Length: 191
Image (cartoon, rainbow, N blue to C red; front, side):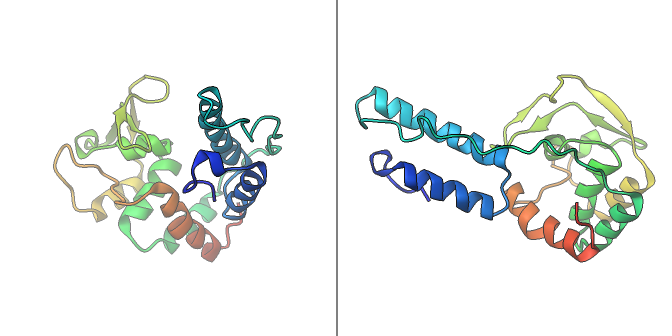
């Protein structure tokens, strides 16, 4: 990897190997290209400050990003996936995204005060850094709580009004790798 090395010690071969490892770990081409773009910005600043002679990312071709259309889960696939998740918080996370249509960042920003008797108030999101901000569109919306979401909410111990509804206590990428993908494989859903 390149993350632990000084910028001056990073070469084009290192960057190519790093990209290959990220892809092998299941990262998408878009995620890898974005990571390389950020690295390139740091290397470009080092080059401008005469700390390195040449930015090794310069001229490196982006990995082609597939534009395949995502196919949503069928109801049977979704319920099969939910059945494979052991923890109530994991089932609720899937339910909030699938049945309520919340974006992952909106799920991260949902607090118990946003859970009303029959609706969810969606007015903020939480970025990967843990900072609360507005929703992607900047709009507030109220969504009905459908039966699967209501059932999953009841299975969790309600926290205080400002406590997060879905608090995984871990990195969300780790959750996808360690919890979601294995449950999806066990359920037979290949999407």
